Image (cartoon, helix red, strand yellow):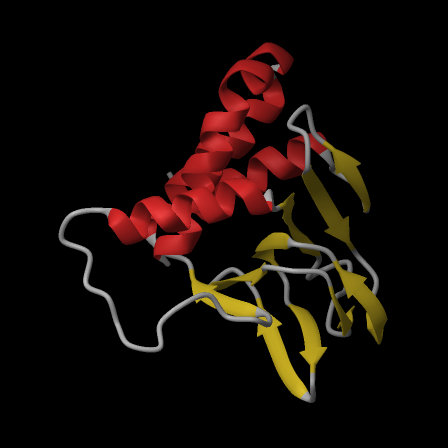
Length: 174
């Protein structure tokens, strides 16, 4: 289970530049082959995982670059500047964008907080801005299991909500 497998699955569905919806509601694959300078956009609550290339976002003067080592978690709608200034046909931007369900995220956060053995840290909590988290084995496995559902509409309909919840959990842990 690796990022290469995730990349291969995305490329199979989207071999050329573009953006497609998958059979999973709120899960989109993207493939960018031309540089785009940072420009004002509005990010919706989203998780963005990159398997090739680098994407940039600027919020309140803070520069956030994320790639196949760090994924982006945007917990709320917010204006940012975003772009892909270093993308080329030889080094494309390939990844998955997942709309976040705030209700499910809140439920999971509450369940995690109430779980036995949880160490509570003073001042802890969810960031109010963009958050970058390192890919770990749990996140990679959960993302692979989710994108595998893009191959079968019935699997996506039946298993998708559970796999999204699993990915949200991995992201919250990370």
